[in-house]
Length: 245
Length: 223
Image 1: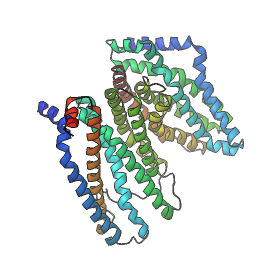
Image 2: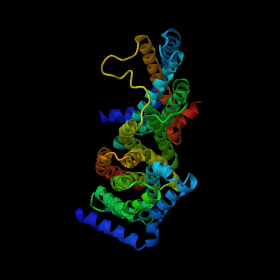
Image 3: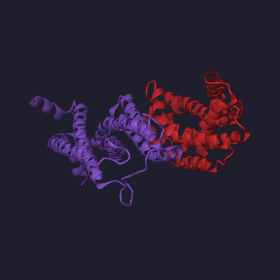
Image 4: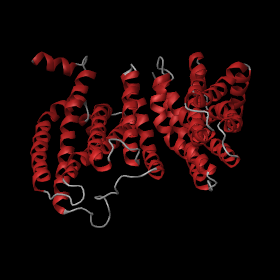
């Protein structure tokens, strides 16, 4: 079992296995994304209160979900990298950080664009906006630490530990900000009873969330492959790849 | 184990007391930053009172942040940190001793001088006691969480800005509840909830932060 994991997670093996997966993820993300956007922008009914501008949620909400999801991925794979010394896990964490930061940024920008017509201001110090902003700062701190340490292995471990500390802190930050000030509308999807959202809006939202996940899958594979090539640039398997070109 | 804690604590305190001028620096910084605000904004007592909790808490945060450097820097440079890690005592306990010393040398003086700053910012008397309690519960967390950050960045050249970048987001809950406690108290409302939250965060940080710091120190040392 252990040997199998070791072999399976070697950068070389990963590099050769992941190539076809990228296309699978990217094409399905594109198809589902286009269908989801079509349903969201043209088929879903107009909101009785917010009019047409609510339609930005089909980008905004999946981006916000992804920003949290990717942080979890980062922390979990950092943990795997620190505990079991699996290099591939460290690479995944390092490759995920800029993607997660971009999603957090996207969520903030789309939220600001939506906030102007709805709340009358691009930015308000509302709890969820603030915690999203703090999440972006956590990503930036991770990336700064990662790039400040020259030795790759200790850079991975140090920033990985920071990601894990961040995960412990995220709920505390979230709730303290929540109690501090809230203006944002309450959760409409993740309630335990029926979602307080029309099914014609919910389906495109879920499709978009799936498309974003697949898009992340494709991106993280590409970035992890690059990371593997770069970090193993002096190893034989990369040399052999180059010679084949 | 307790003996190791006690001796390391005494060693750090003694080292700091031999260097008295450095000891006062964070404290002077704290007072200085708070003094800037009436000059920059307005000396009107009402306005000052409204922003006092935030100003004092942010200044305390920055003062602790600037002083974090001395937690491990000197020991790292002269190699005694490596010696500590080689000792048979659990590193967690040693970290806890160093953090306790750091808090006694920076956090506690901030708490003691805080009433004076409350006076500067024309805080009402009820709010001053809330300020003291909230700082008393909050500043140890700042030292504990800060220790994680310093141990990750101590080997980085010019790690100061980097340290604030990774640590300040983690300080936000403390800032919110600390400043809110003072704010609520100046309106004459009870602050038990805020203080209990700060206490809970302190308990959590006290149990987990030394562990994370110990891991971080080992990562730094393995370089």
